[in-house]
Amino acid sequence: MKKRIIVAAIAAICLILSAGASFAGKKHSKDKSAKDKDVKEYFVAALGGGNSVDIAIEGYTTNGDMQNFASLYNQGGEKALKKALRKAQMGYFKIGGGQNMPLAIIESTPPGPARRLNMIAIAPAVFTARYAGDLSARLSDYPYTLIELEVNSQGKGRGIMYEFVNLTFDQQGRVHVHPMGGQGLRAGLMGVHLAK
Image (tube, rainbow, N blue to C red):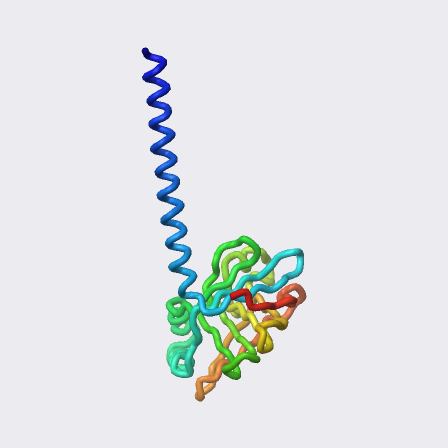
């Protein structure tokens, strides 16, 4: 009798765990599909060392946005600009199976199928954590990451990623990017293609 009760209890526990896992799986699937609806374009590129870079574009930065960033920068400096960029998420990128890292600015010039994409993020902690010493002390002057892609009408092309850059804005709202010098601080992106 006791054996039957124990077997029945174990079976009930397994059934509950199975149902919970099924529910969690359905919830995750729903969240993922909802997120995918926000992604307008999804690029994949090959990076050195066998890694890949995934870039999800959820929207594009407008001329009005850039004018606003320029005004904030020219009036409040780097601190005001960075505060605004932390709130502006136009998409994200990730390396390999790593975490999603927000893209604050995404520009497409000229608008259309064959174009150049400039994407700017606040430099992720996973980048800055790799460096120490004199180089680490300089990183605060280059607090952003730049990804540039040049793609044709089929969404294929090449690109480059600068791990650390600084930004300045002119009075017309145009952004000027200044990469940090040094070997290993930029990487070519090959086999760029539009996956979605």
